[in-house]
Image (cartoon, rainbow, N blue to C red):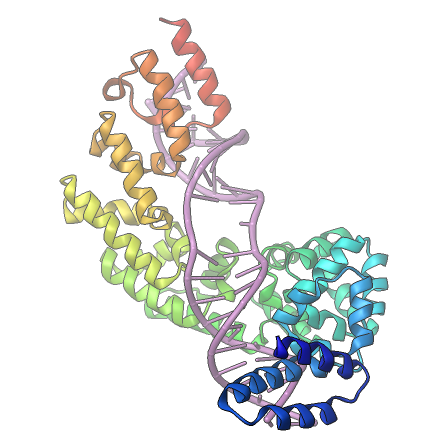
Length: 381
DNA sequence: TATACCGGGCTCTGCCATCCCG
DNA sequence: CGGGATGGCAGAGCCCGGTATA
């Protein structure tokens, strides 16, 4: 109670720039016992946190509909700044077609946005727009990922990235894909991107590849998120996958830019965990080690499936009488959602569909093709 | 003409830790 | 030493349809 009262008093005082005086008085008054000292330190902490906040900035933001609590939690320092550009940011984004809610949401999620000058915004937006073609497209990305757009103030670095990525043979269309889907690539230091590219080129060469340039290009185009991963993660996954799948160098190189490209950037512990549980499950069904290796290298996407999801699907399929060999031969059945599997197998059980004779391909068809097929099956009965 | 094969579409931020500079 | 800049992490599938092929 005492604490709360003091806090509200001090907060009031902060507003009137008489904080230091009050802190001295109250801390003196409270320092008699340790209990008091505890509250005193709480109080000082609290004051420290909010004392330097720029009240006029706060009220500006409030008027703009910014979630102050969220902003404070994310970047408390920004609320203390004396010079900010929230008004020009608002005008700028508005001129690009952003709604009031969008602007507020952007600032709430990434308060540092208000430290960028109008000139800076103009310049960077232009560059993004050149790549993405339309303001609307840029706005979409900025709204989705304000951090990618606002985190760095270094325009030279942005340009360096564009030059570098283009030098790899990536086309304007590729760059547009990259910026749209993995915008952080462009706020990475160019040096960091170079490190990843170097790593991939070295990898290609060490596996006996002859065109590292082309290899890197393919990997980036096929896995657009690769440049926002750490080389550490990539290295760990590559090492794990090569030793697990036991592929020859050349074969492995081919695999990386083909089937395997999507799983390269999975969280390393995740890929290991999923691999382990998938292996265990398949062994329990009577698969041989070789079969399992072949299965996973031909269809690595199953490593994407969480342990539970994988096991649930396998269990479900085997319970309704589908043989493990059928699953191995048609792994795509595992990418069908469990709900779709349930719906379809229920439909099919009603017409006594025999998976042994007619296969399980029907479970994997697209919705329209499935309906057509089902209709034909029903009519022919 | 039905099925198999295959590539591609969607999509990935928001948080924390650490570095680095004034 | 504070704060801006930057790096890195966890999280975790499903669907469609063009074209080859039999």
